[in-house]
Image (tube, rainbow, N blue to C red; front, side, top):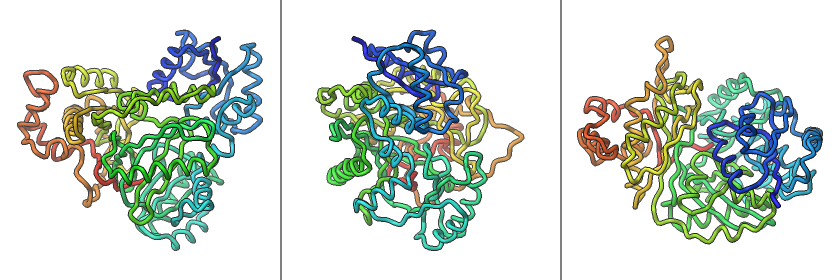
Length: 502
């Protein structure tokens, strides 16, 4: 008997298609509830899903019990038979997915537990009231509350919306005046309502980790830890890479994983793949930055597939169906080191020909045995924010490399990104009518990935390495271009000691 699984909503096509392909290959019948104008209409045409149920206004309706009943009513009208599980994939629909699963009496996390994760101020309150964590943090809605919190805060601090993802609206502030100024700016953003909650919290200095947990029946069945890299562009933060396995001390890793397992149980999570961002502080020990009750995005899926021989899409599906997952975790982590990084642009502009650009990069380095994957993250027509702009930079292309050490994998990654950097204007043509002020990078930063890749190479040797890795007789980068790229790289990644938190 084939299982029928319900999925609510959709995300970007280029990031979602691999998930639908995998679910289809596993033989389950996917019933997708989505809006009429969504790209997912083609999934039914391609027979990648069993049925697409249209619900107008899905993304804008309040995620409450009424919407859950509307979804179930629309599904029942299609006479699809019993639904055996609900698969959660997207941040935007986590709350409604939990309500639908509860209404169907299938496996999943409670609405209350998911709500504690979606709203970060509730996460803080839960972890602090349990005694698991203690640090300076304030929940804010009005400017009067902001003024009071700003003058009571220890700086540097981080200001961010209580609900959100991808570092949107997250800024580092150095003083009470700057905190109030940034809060006033954020209140003008289109997504902010009168009741939008913000958090002002103490900045945690120290390495950042990406942690994945798999829970079933309230028990942690699997856990992994990766080093997370962050980009500091002015006061804004952006995740720019992952390192697997972590190179931090084993006792620190063990402490972080133990802390994350306790945090998941404290907020009430019991089932599924859970993604966490965590900082290690000499002052506090581990501190949870955020808990996401779904699989991590970006490089998380591919990293687990190649390093642990685990497909997290299948793991999430099994937990949604309440099928045993223990047999999936028999493989030992690979001894190979993997690095993931992102191509970004120094300037803003409209993305064009991104698939061709990514394919060109793949072809250039097709003979490089340490290249694992190159894939487009943005879509054509997207307005990309450059890192030299006072805003959150846009990740354009993801590159994953491997090596017998962190430095070896980093060197390969840096050289590939350096080559992409030299041709970045093909991907994001600069707008001559837009004048962008350069945001000075903080001076007390660890080496960028470019510096890590080329610190022992001369400019001519870098060009030779690019030629060698790409399997061509000529370097794509001329010495002149290589020199320019080394002085002003478009991809800044701080992998040794991140300066930011999200």
